[in-house]
Amino acid sequence: MATFTFRISEDLRTHLNSAKMRSWIAEFISNPRQVPPDPGPGDGRISLTLPSDNVREVAALLHCEPSCALRRLAAERVGLISKPASASIPKPAIVPHATAAPKATTAQPSVTRASSLKDLVERRRRLAALSRKTGAPMTDKNSEGQGWFLVAGVVAFLAFLFFGFGNGNALE
Image (cartoon, rainbow, N blue to C red; front, side, top):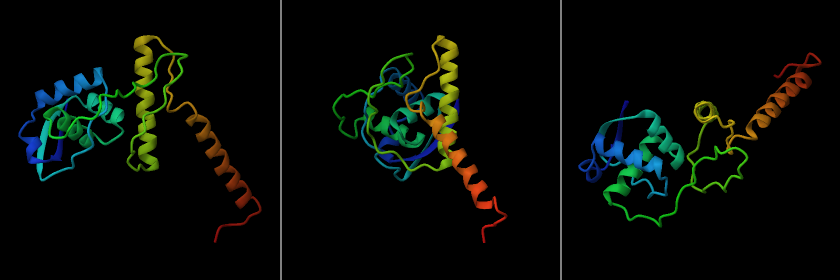
């Protein structure tokens, strides 16, 4: 459990507590779906004690930051924003040898290289844990080609260093 403190509108804040949000998170993880867009941070602040792994999972499913994911989930459950059509968000493909469904198209926040690497490492840890628990091979449709991309980047960088400094030339 961890304490999540984030900005939220007063309308939403009056309807929230940790127990409600924990039950909404558990229900969302068992049945992912599209939820309304982020209603925005608002003027209020709230602190909720929630399972950090579950909050990160909800944020990953919704492709947004944890505070944004919690506001979106609360807005849907409280009913302050009209619900979209009940389209489901596909769960991550962890079934071995399965053809992955097309990825849901949602706006993604801009990420830096460091946070992308952190996300990739976290995704790999989750997949390894699931692999150990289920006995299924560790696969992830979002990162299948990222290993080769990383190797190609390292090779390109080394080639730049070799050809750029190979003759004793230095960048000025």
